[in-house]
Image (cartoon, rainbow, N blue to C red; front, side, top):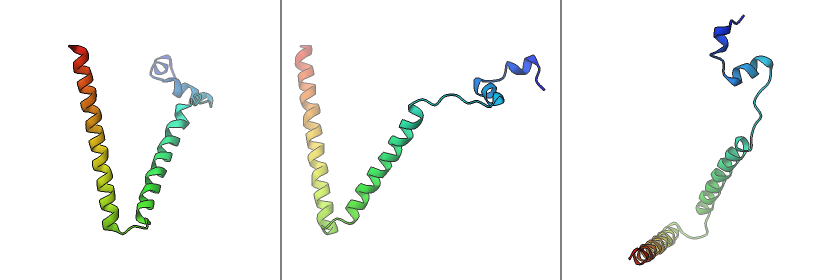
Length: 91
């Protein structure tokens, strides 16, 4: 069986397992895996949507490239504006 020195090495889960019990599951135990599966589903859906898009491949790639450039430009403008605003506040 067990002696007193063995009980010092037991964790809470070990003791509960000996009693046939387990710790109560919290919201994070089911929310995070659900969000992960949802994210994978979104990515797979977007990929399939691109594969079966009605545009030819070259035109679709050009459109995506242009959208990414527009997004990069918008992000650069936003960061430039925030830096300018921060610099004027610190003066």
